[in-house]
Every structure is written in C-alpha cells, then in structure tokens.
Image (cartoon, rainbow, N blue to C red; front, side, top):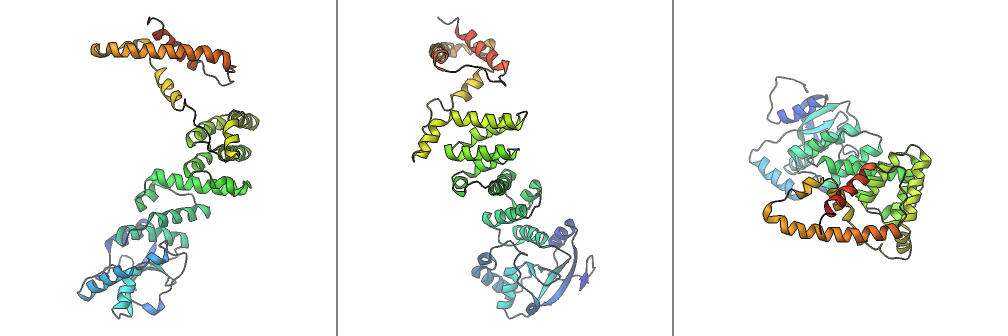
Length: 347
C-alpha cells in the first residue's frame, strides 16, 4: 500500500480527495489494486440511499468511458474494506470484467465520520445527493447526540445554513415532544416552522404547555415565536406558565373552532399591528416631511387614518380590558401619542 504523502504517482490518485482527507485529519493510504471480492457493503458507512448508489444509466456511462481509456478517482474504503464512496465507479469496473480497483483506505474512522465524508465526496465528485439524503444524514447525527457545526455542513452539502438550522431544531423538537409524552396527533398538525420555533422554549413544562396550545389552536409560527420570546424572558417558571395560560384564554375562539373541526377564523385586523408598529417609530416632523407633489394625497390619507383611529380608540376604551400588562413598555404609549399629535391638527 502506498502510504500517505507517498511520492508514488498513480492515475487514480486524486489531489482533491487527498486534500479532503487531510482536512479531516484522517490517516489514509492508497492501494492501487484492492480485490473487489474483498470489498464489503455495510450499512451506516454511507448516506446515499441504496436505490441511488449506482444508477444503471450512470454505471453504463462510466463503463463506456473506462473502455475508452478514461481514468476515474480511486474509491474510498475504511480499513475493514467497507465502502464509503465510489459505488458507481466500482460497479462500472465490475461491468467491464475487472477484479481489482484502486482505493483510498481510511484508518480508524468512525461510522459517523464515514457518513460525513461520504456526503462531501458525493457532492464534490459524484452524483449530487438529494435533499432527503442530506437531511437524513443531519437528523441521524443529531439523534446520535452530535452537535452539528452548521456553517461547515452548509459548505459540505450546498444546503443553506438557515434550512439546516430548521432541520436541526425540528429534530430536537421531536425528541423533546416525545420525551414529554405529547400526543403524536398534536405533533403531526404542527408545521415544521412552528416546531422549530417551539424548540427554542427553554423550560420543559412551558415547552409542553405551549406546544399543546400551538397545536390545539393551530397557532401561526410568527405568533409562536413571539410567545416563546415572552416566556423565555419571564423571571420564573410560574410567570412563564401564566403567559401561556393567558394566551390560551385569549385564543378560546380558535380552540373551540378547531375542536369542532373547523379552521380558526382569521381576524380582520391580522397584519395591522405590524403597520401600526412601524408608524409609531416616526416622529411628527418625520411624518410631515413629504414631497410637495405628494402632500395633498398624504393629507387625505392622514385624515382617514385619524378618523378611523379616533373611532377605534373610543370603542377600545369601552370594550377592551385595558389593564396594562406587567411588562408594558412606556415607549408603546409614547408612540401612540406621536400619532395623535400629527393627526390632531388635521381638520
């Protein structure tokens, strides 16, 4: 066997493969003539799904190229002669009647390290892996207790780091929900984005209660993120549970609708809070800083906003429970006064 850093040159040696092995601190050697009958198929060494490991059409193309003198990189094995990378090259060699193949032999490599290497080599040299294959590899690693390095995985796989983060969070959510004994039927109705948002919940009892509420009320992921931020900022577990209980009371209509087999009714004001929140960030002078040719149109819109806000404020004072929450921010009230100040002079 040609050892690592050997000066011996061989057509099947690949600087790209060797560089990746060296980056991973893998002890490797090169063997130009491994007997194919000694090579083993072992589950857990590869991430490629069996149906995708040596596609017939790809094997035929490789076989034809080999017959015409094309040189392919060596396959990759562990020191137990188990395949890590190179299924199509191996099958094409067999198709052409070969009984030996060139191979890089990796020493002392674990099953997880082998699968990780398989991902990177497939993406670089072979038929690119499907997203399902990549996702399964990452999920399996998380379930085995590994702590994924998201930036490195994104570089290896070509999958966006935000998507990988969501896969990881959703996987951890599943484990936490199962540990908490939450009914699988509730878990199944939650979209992946909602599961990922719930996973950020810190305290176990709060996570359980909020997950059940989110499922029973079909709570949107954006609302879940907001509540998770509130409960994680609570000063005690009891305070966090009170926040969830208050939210359950506020969503009584949604809960009744879902329990009766209907979708929760969308509130007509959905989205208005976002626009109002953006508006209160402006000072009076900011709102009056309008191009001359736009002033008439802006004036008309401001007057409409004022009239509707006046009506809303009057009814809210009569119909809403306006007891300030313990976490109310004075800035919220200051913003409301800013709107009132710009609206009041318009007659």
